[in-house]
Every structure is written in structure tokens, then in C-alpha cells.
Image 1 (cartoon, rainbow, N blue to C red):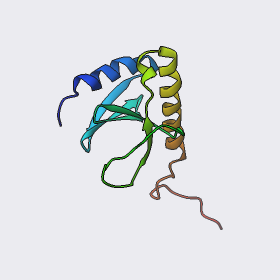
Image 2 (cartoon, rainbow, N blue to C red):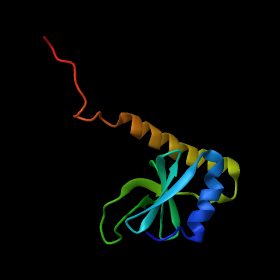
Image 3 (tube, rainbow, N blue to C red):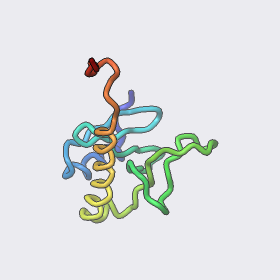
Image 4 (cartoon, rainbow, N blue to C red):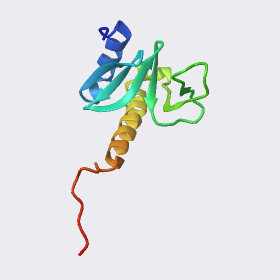
Length: 115
């Protein structure tokens, strides 16, 4: 795994007021976590935030295919205005936490038996 580049380190620093920001290299890009929840991707020098935002470009992991993921191109003002950063990144973090809560329970967990 390569070490984080300057842009990844810059993003971690910029987003640190939101919580504990960490990164992990995956599939040629970087995932950003806030307190353990994935809220952003960095690929090809761009930040994509978790969720959907009409009018913002969705993340396409394979440029030659139509497949998109539920991440959208972050607006540039997140790096210029702390309120904008808190708004946009805060929405992405809330989406990540909502998705985590909706994850189904493991089938290995015991279930109540009807008698």
C-alpha cells in the first residue's frame, strides 16, 4: 500500500474538525473515514462524497463503463469555506452512519424461536 499523497494528507487535515479522519488505500484510490465511517473517496485527484446530489457528477470507478457509485463530486467550496465543508461533508457522514445502521444483522446471530 502506498503512503498517502499530499492531497490525501491535505484532505485529512481540512476535514479534521468533523471528527477523527483516517484513510485507507483501496482499488487505486483512497477511502476517507470519519470516526470509522467511510464518507468520501479520493480518486484521480478529486474528492467524492457519499450520498447523492442532483447536478453533481457521480463517481465512475471505471471510466469506460456506465457503472456509477453513490458518491458525488464534492463542490470546490468545501476547501474555501468551513461552513460549506461542514455542510457537504456533514451530509456525507450522516449518510454513511445511516447506511451503517441499516446494515442487516448477521445470519450467525441467534434468532427468537416460535413455540
